[in-house]
Length: 191
Image 1: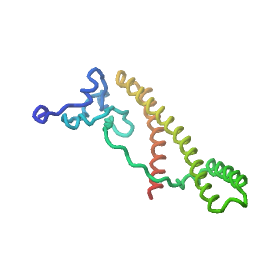
Image 2: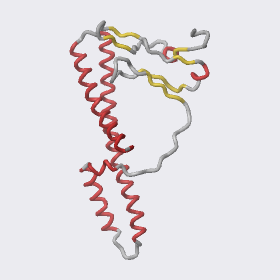
Image 3: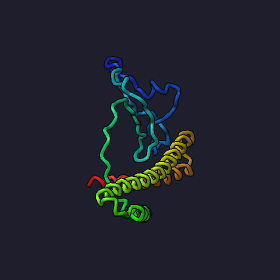
């Protein structure tokens, strides 16, 4: 059937020398390669990158496919109202707006001009704050994902090591908490 449909396991084709598994059987304490990404030549040309990610939620490792393609259109900026609940953000915003209003309290400037400029200041403060916060969260998430990868590699060679299994469980739990927090925030924004 593979030759009839001209199908290729793209991960194996792009990584012929790598040994990486996609499924861990807890009862048998073994790793196997059972998840594959089959494609024909037409689709394969659109593939930019393929990677086996660490298993965080299930007993199978996800396979990430990155496609070549069009960029997403830009969205309009809106204030993330969840930030208003964060004391660090509101304190920073209050300080900056007090300074802004003190410096721009002039009879020569129209109220409309002050309002428009203040909106730009709020946007700038918000973007700087969220960028910094997101970088910190992504760095922590990446550290945990890297640790899961390292533990998976170690567990592939010594699957019965209980210490490694416990470390894996704790690390996955920490990552799960970060991801849940992110999903909750996204749900609150879309509702």
